[in-house]
Picture (cartoon, helix red, strand yellow):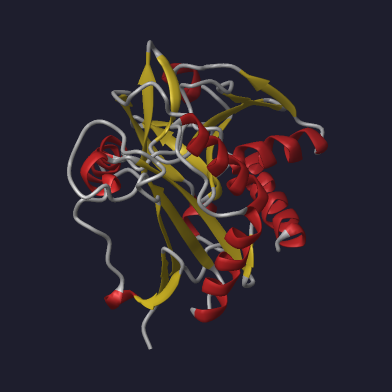
Length: 287
């Protein structure tokens, strides 16, 4: 049997799932999303993802069409029905289908939001070879809109960044604006100097990463200093270590930036330790 997905209150085989061509997510990228990781069949950082979802919806003046309890129940049901041990649950909410195309938002009393969820099986998510070896990144100008704190589905430029990195033989790209690193294409960016973890402060310029919050908390508990400020590519190239965090990559070391090795050119011990701590603690708190 194929994958079971969720569309507007129904569990369906994926081949039977449809969304209208007039849905504003399709026509206008008028929607938000979240991705929650699954380890051992349980959800990682679910409450954080649910809270950020509510914030993203509020920032776009979009209704919250599903309660926290129902959202959790659907996530768990999809994990169970699809037999996910390690993987992801993708959630997308759009402003819905008003029946035609218009730049003006539809009346929310007349147009219900569209809610879609599906799973992706990712065996080896926790034991990823890239996390042990580290990845290379390139830098690109940050040409995205200036509300990156809202997790919208308008992901064309990050996709272009991923493709540019792939063409350059790298694993990802870091975006740069006004001479400073904002974040990666789908992750937050960090450097390590001595015992200090440095990452850009929260603002509208970056996504408020759920994994970021957990990792910085664990770093502080492990007696590492945390400094929230912007840094340059040159500073990153001269750092002892660098790494990224996201819900799907957890903590992954960066070993090269724009062709320049970071530190020893191998995965750094602090990044590897933070990954170990994050996965261990997340498994304990998973629901």
